[in-house]
Image (cartoon, rainbow, N blue to C red; front, side, top):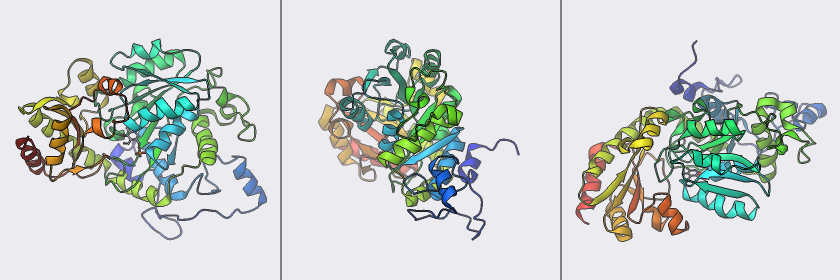
Length: 430
Ligand SMILES: Cc1ncc(COP(=O)(O)O)c(C=O)c1O
């Protein structure tokens, strides 16, 4: 068979009917531990003689068959060499960075980020001695300018939540390749259906599975996927943690022993083992189910969102609409290049009247849910300046495009007429 398409991989990758029971759907393996065959089998597993876990599991903090299945599907969808599923998107972001950063190191990140990630980078990592250098991604060269010999990675969100100005994935990846700095992409809002960052040169992807992957707003989870394409050994001076004997794991030299799966294996064997933010088997099951309909849902979300954007763009009570399909210049160029012909499931709108205007508009919506999360089947809205981004300093917030009257709308998969009617009624009350 020729290489399967994404829709097919989302259903079939990494799984066959259970050979013992015949179960077609991957069962929920609700177990903490696993029986070893022998002392030498146990020893092999602890020494990572079986890095892909084909011959056994150790403990569900480090791996679980239901969760493995989700990891295999994500690996296939992104076209990588391995993945680690985690307890939340925030865990995935933290471990992806901490896997290659130590106190005294820095990394360069777009300032257009989900507020929680922005807080993590700015505050928690600073307290760990790791410096996040925030730059505007409108000019990809800003990444080059911020690099020094302590820079360990570049970071960006494909479709930044809630700024929605598409990240120049290929342009920044190219700079990273020239300098020996890997590009890590948070692909939460685009999903592999709109964008496969590895196809554009990125090296690591990170997802909050809580959003479109799960798709129904029912569970929290995250995942890190490794392209296997960054040469950590070639840049050994920049990445001692992957090239020198690692005291945290039997003195292993990760790249020497594991080649192109060194990064993702280290993440599982150290970050996940020692910090412990594993994905629950039940959530692995739900995310597997979510993946099976991801392509259908994303198409409908994006189709509805584009109609909402066009409707709002002509409304007298609106200052401006932010939607990749209606952007101009480089923003439009990158939206066309990196979103696979769709423009995403979210629409940003600045309502006239500043903070009270934005808040009143959200309160007036009746069918839309007023919630902090995104990526549900339901339409949802929030006023970021007074909620998700209220802890981000005002100047940084404005620079990230979160103006006072800005409302982030995640357009669901309801009938478009009902979505437009709800917005119309709320705008009429302003
Ligand atoms: C782009 C992005 N990354 C990461 C996260 C964090 O994910 P989680 O809420 O699953 O921890 C979010 C949550 O909204 C997000 O939107």
